[in-house]
Length: 478
Image (cartoon, rainbow, N blue to C red; front, side, top):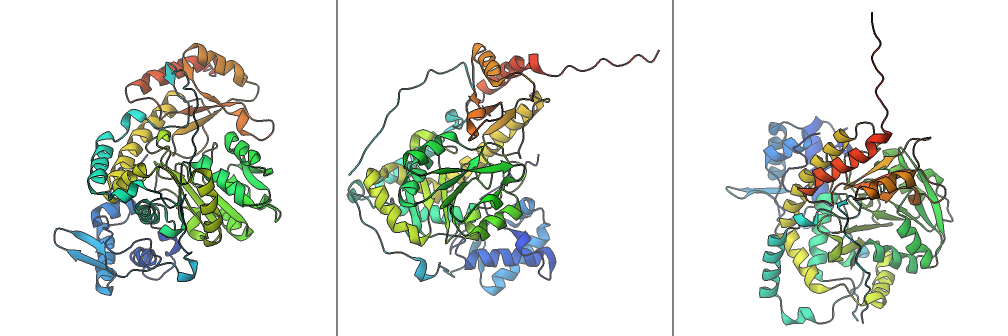
């Protein structure tokens, strides 16, 4: 796997393939991709660009090509350069059309939930959380101190149901820069995570929800409990079969960048079909930052912002206990979703919002993501090397791997029981299918600490060894 993408500088989403037919080759394509990002508002005034050396390494271009593109855009007034300050976006503040900006929304009461803590296993390989021992405590503490030292007292009063404007502003810029999302602070709703996001959507969007098969079983239950019908959307090696969507489906819930749990990105032809379908798309970009072999696939939302609800969280980047997530929503839905959020819990806790905003603004969040990419890339490589006979579909991305058990092999329950006896906690794969599912295991390779992971992987490999195919003895040539 390539190292330089995972450990590169400030994240920047540029799709040169859209521009390659232009005369002038790669330099012209890079120029036009940057112009488009500035015009769309994804790169606002003052955004600092990577050095020509860093961007050339990321995009696999020559440094001379990047330098020439930067020089051309400086001459056109899109970029500015100052000795010692690098290259920045010039003062050309593009915005979404004013017609897309909704009126501001009001504020208001709250609610909470709790669950009993689970027993901690010896080897925790359950999916659903990052390495919590790598939480950026010092950066979080510095940001918290800054927030407490500078915030006005009014911050602790009632909050807009959509969330603090500081975080919504930071998110709009960050998501544009790193994921290609086209939105404004007024069109973002801060949530307590994807569970709340899908619950709010099921309350305000009437009609059946198509959800990937296989997909997250708990999210299906959330939609059903909100009174909506769930329609299976089959998945194969190209991702969700978007051609199966029908006009009577109200919303399609998909994971285009990295399908859960099969691990494949949505094929370009199916992205096109999804855009042409015409219904509401709910994009769960649950681990869009964590691609290890190349630049991450850009968010689908950037191709159809008027009818895509883009959802993200800090659950896999920082930790699910922070309860911080967001939705970038089409203008037509901002009013109903804001009202639903107000009656759900008034608003998300404000101090965490302000601290996250500070982390994003100072690029401490970028630095944490880059370090996590390198850490999890190494873990995935080690997992694949240690289980050479395992069927692990999907691309090099995410924080978990799906291990499919062979047909006619050991049943899922038998393998899980053996793992449990060895002190290994995993998740079964079969419940992820809407009907009868494939036997398999979901392996969360991010959860253990750096010291604990090798021991957990050795325990897993040792437990699965009894079912590995035996090498045939070589035939004698005598």
